[in-house]
Amino acid sequence: MAFPSVALRRPARSASATRPSLRRAPVLIVDADAVTARLLRATLEQDHDAQVEVVADYEAALDHLGNAARPTRLIMLDPMLAGLEADALLALLREHKARIAVTLHGRVPPEDLPFPENFVGAAAYTHMASSASASATAAAVVSQSLTVHDIINARRVPPTLDWKSAVAIYTAEPGQPFPLTLRT
Image (cartoon, rainbow, N blue to C red; front, top):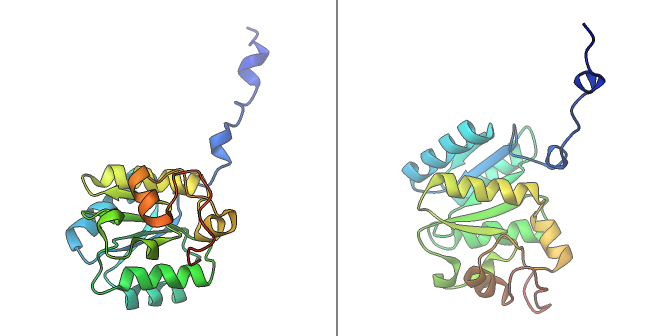
């Protein structure tokens, strides 16, 4: 019996196969709320096969970033860490123009924070209604290669941010250039 030649061909690679994904990606969750962190970790590991580490504060995040066996690809950050720890972590990532994607998550959106402009470099904000939506947003950010470095160099508001958060953080709409006056 003869087989059609189509059956012998390898399937064509899809465009999404060449994009970075969360599969086996080193992910750091920085969140003082153990329940939220546990839910995010479980979703990232089960749905995206990510390699996840969880820390609760700035010092532990620095320790992890300095001692990680592989470079971290994504940081999921709660902007409401004690004091201004989340602000300080993002400032450090901006200073070094880190090639790490950063997403914000939590109950308080950036527009309600005292200094939303301190989160320049963040690619998305997800309200913590579900860990699935935060994980899906994180996967989209990684697949679009929206690292702190890339956002600063392009000087464009990430298209993955919602309108309110984009205007609060970058003083511009998603996809638009942001002002040179913003600290980068």
